[in-house]
Length: 230
Image (cartoon, rainbow, N blue to C red; front, side, top):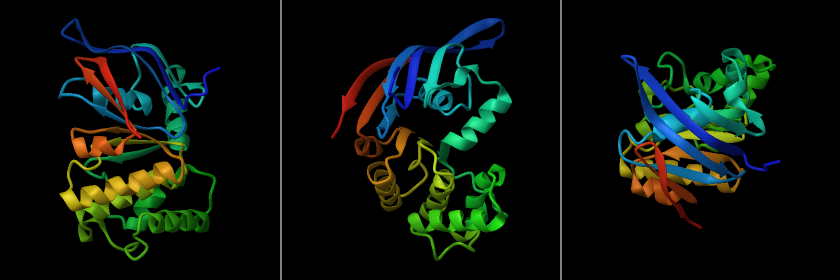
């Protein structure tokens, strides 16, 4: 049995348009081990965001198997997949995806609403997550009252509040200035090295890719080459 955190086994993805099949990914086959920090790079249209969505259970493959923590998520129905995502995956998006009418604390609490926790327990976990990302003094602030870097920190706190084993990040530094981007990369590195989180990140930013331990490149829906970093 594989000890991989994520195992992609001959995964393919296509879409149908006008009666024609449009291939996006072809025969993707590799493992991501627990505690890995992987960056996916490639030109626009290479399929890297599609691959990230498949790993996160946001989309389903057209063929092949995707095992995450031993569960073949390609076989789950929509309800099972939603429950699985809530328990196992933390999401970080380029544009934060925060609710503007909620405070930082309330935004971080959102993933816990489906968990068997009372209000006090949700609040304690959310406060702890915000403290981890350095925003203990911003819990009552709304997104409009925070900088871009602070909003991304709130998004990271939301991603880790349920203590998922897997964190997926789609261009997490893409909307940030250089200094804020470096701070976010340092935070992701801490989550990976100190907390053992497995991180899969899509990026166009070479500096962000340099922060990862592995970089996989995609070209026209196929894996081209792998870079190993220390």
